[in-house]
Structure formats: structure tokens, C-alpha cells
Length: 294
Image (cartoon, rainbow, N blue to C red; front, side, top):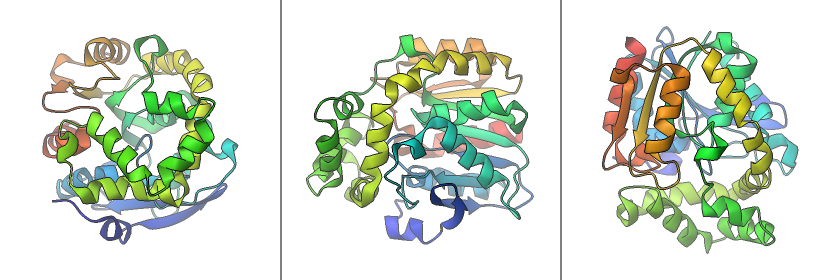
């Protein structure tokens, strides 16, 4: 069942961080194993609305932030507010917030939000107790950025990003989600509306900053891959097999090799594309819960 965006936001708390306030969802028993679900571009904690409740029902402590610039969090205009390093510091600030200290991080992250978690793995590897890898990349040579990111980084990037946040942007987001979900055009209208609304509120600026800094971010991928090779923690890879940008056949073996993933912990799901949170939420939650409990 799809929760409306207002219903989802009614459950969010907020925390002051550098450059503003971030919103976040915090569910499950406070003594449960902590799981941090990190969204990517250009989404928000709403992406995990169906997974978070299932993990909390399984007895896990679930923390799902809207990173600064996205979702219901503040949306600063300053491009420097949206770097991977800055976002990673905000995630650890959330974990260290009094009364919500998670101690360590069992992280799941999708698409090109991966660098935000990879920064933590490189900077503070002791925080990472386990890692769940979902349709992302730490290998510049094994991926081609989606056309939306390339266009927003181009000569017409700024007006195009603003257009994504305009009322005409609903159609653009519907097309984007249609290309990156197995459900395609079958996504419920309220899901499209919920993904477009933060862009309309100003998230287009963070998306533009991400696209404009994409080359610099990808230049850090070799550092991230090296951090993953040093990271001696349990890991699982869960992938939407129909992802047209982040190809399972190329990227899954790279993560498996660098993280030393056991074959039993490699899951390439059919009938699932880039946003497998939309396509296979029940299976995704079940795999994550079983992995973390183990």
C-alpha cells in the first residue's frame, strides 16, 4: 500500500545540522539492530516507505534520512552544501544525535547516493558493521550516468533543472520513474507526485549541484573502491536485474570481489529495475532483515 507524501512526512523528525535542518524517519525498537537506509538521486526517504515499516516490524531500528537538499529537509542554494563529504558528515551527526545514537551503521544505499556512504566507509570504517549494496557504483569505468544527469550538467542544465521543479516537471519525473522501474507507467499517481513534490519545493538545486559535480564525484570512485576492499565486514548485494544504467552483469561481480561477498548473499532480482524499492519492496525488506539479524 502506498502512503501519501503528507502521511509519510507526518512521521518525520528533524535535526539541526550544518547548513540547515534534515528530516528523518526513525522506526522500530530503540534497542534493535540499527539499519540506515540512504536514498540517492533525486529521491528521498519516501523511496523506503514500504521497506522501513517491514524492517521495524522485524525488530530492527530503522533510520531513514532526507539528506540536506532533498525530501522534507532544508534546501540551501549553496552548491558546496551538497558534496558527498558534507552529506556523509550529516549522516554520522544523525547517528550521534543524543538519544538516537546508533553506535554503528548497517547501511543500504541505492543508485548514485552510494558515495555518501562510501565516504563513511573510507573516513570512519569503524562505524560500518555491515553493508547492503543496492544498484550503485564505485567504478567509473563500469557505468554511464543517466541522461538526466548529463543534461542537467550541460549548457542548458540550470533551466532544465528548474523545469524539473516546475509543474511541467511532473511529466519528466513520470518518464524518469517509468524508465527506471519495472512497473514503468504502472506506478501509482501518488508515487509520481511524491517524488516530484520535493523538486518543486527546491530539490532541483541539489540535483543540479550533483550533476554539475558528477565528474569530480566519479574521480573519487577509485578511493571508494579501495575503501571497500579494506572494509572487513559482512556485506550483501541486492540488485534490480533490469537496471539499464547500472548493469548487474558488470557491477555486481566488482562489488562481490571487492567486498568478499558470499555467493549466498548475492541477489539479482528479476522484475526489478533501478528502483527496486518500488518494484520488489517485500523481497528487499525480507533479504535485508534476514541479513542483518544473521
